[in-house]
Length: 116
Image (tube, rainbow, N blue to C red; front, side, top):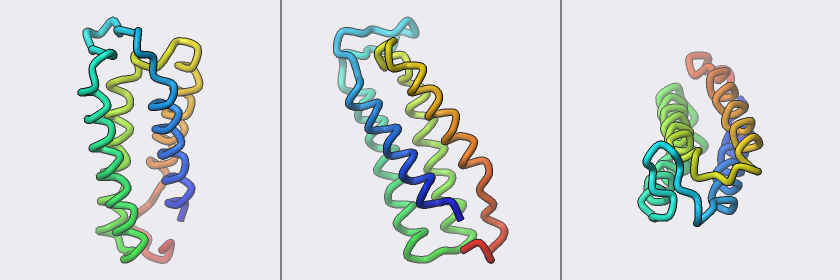
């Protein structure tokens, strides 16, 4: 199963986002990129994803796989919501990584327990 690779990709995407954030960028969607509320939202989803990934690694099953995938999707959705806060020079790379991770999650089949 590609779970550890997906986990690494997702966490690197979050790191790129958090390190590349611009403090002087106010996105056109009305999102306040200067405030820290968006960081809390992304961090909460990242924490939930890490917890679900750990639960899956300790007890690989269809249930924990589905939970980890749902948490990964929630994390990526949170990152998508704050995409405008990523500096323009890094936005293309951010979007590419976001798309790659969405595709990787979509490819994971939790119904096939022989993958675990």
